[in-house]
Image (cartoon, rainbow, N blue to C red):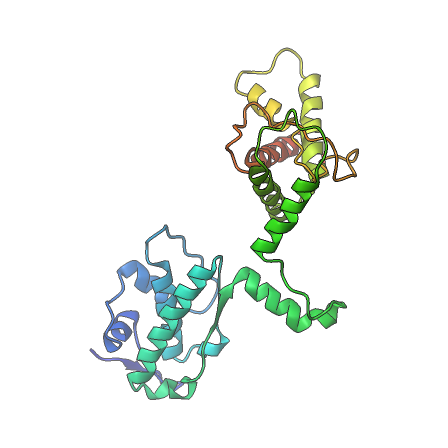
Length: 281
């Protein structure tokens, strides 16, 4: 096994396979090696569960550091869950330790450097804390934890004192539904009134069509016009109070389904139809 030397930088260059052998690790597959050894620049990699994504990302980071293309402490790694972040950080730290113990002179100066690996939410919280004053915010602001979010939603549900004869869900199910709806609306950058408006728009479009709707379209239109309102959540301009009467879920949505999972997908379908009609959302 031999490594090549760069005439411009004077650094030794390793292929992903060579570096794996130097570190005493299994050699990557051809597909993994293509990802690990890709040049600097935007790169999208699509891989399924259990395909070795974390291992490949860790190997790429170490390969870039070993070839002098980046400093380890200039790398940012973001994942969705704390578990995934911890796993990726452990893999990267283990590979970097092997790299430094291998005695590669080119990277000895970076022995104390470590990349920043975190979840999206944790890193966003760090940005807010570091730069809050630039936006006129309090540096002590913190992201609401899932536990606190549940407590707030549960308090809203528990405070509801409207009619309950049409409500079939348990308080825990409703609380989970409120949190899911909140997250879905935030992900789609939409408000409750916009979801309701799409359903009402579809109802008007259906009423204006001549004849009867096809069997394939009727269920979607009926679902899109569902008037489900979770306790404490205003779904229309008429419901400004958190104590607006709650209506039952659509018969097409079984009580066991998580919070307005159906209404969100309805919103996406309705938005598609609305664009096809060239009406502004």
